[in-house]
Image (cartoon, rainbow, N blue to C red; front, side, top):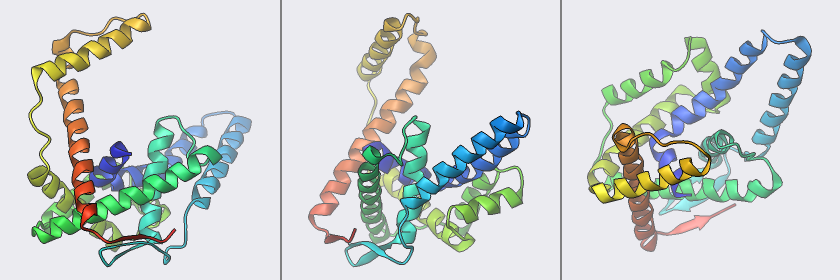
Length: 250
């Protein structure tokens, strides 16, 4: 859950939009395959999409109230799409009966945590400049071959441009807040060595040889940094919850 919350904060929009745009790319690739295989793949994708959309709720429904701030179904559906995409990337089916309640809980927890952190960022006067928003927008657009594909993905995600820009502004403020207020702390050589030893042992267990520590040290350090950041964020959210009024409506 901690991992998903952190991803929502730092990469929600890109994940949602690329996931929505990815179906188009897959369909185009399918044109090179036999007609029967293409139709079968298309049917599977359409069936999965229906199941994913079935987990959505009414856009105007109040999902939760956090310190008098309403979280609506439209917010829920955007966060839901992100979590569904993450689970699919990990080879899990978010539409299965077993996963349905987990998806719902993670989506709500992520939204509540994000709202609390954003409220705290606003209190501390963190702001997103227009140039920062435009830069983020360009980075997302660059992941699509054409403007048309970007707009199609935006529509499919349930967002319009105004909503996207608002979400980007929130995302930027949260990044600023996390960087300044929730530092991950220093990564020690001992921690890097310990993670490397675990990695090397796993590689050995499947008959592979791990690369030298020097070759993977930057990736290990980044992984440890993200792990510590997630732990710090989870602790900060729990602290904020103690003085917050939270009413879950679904």
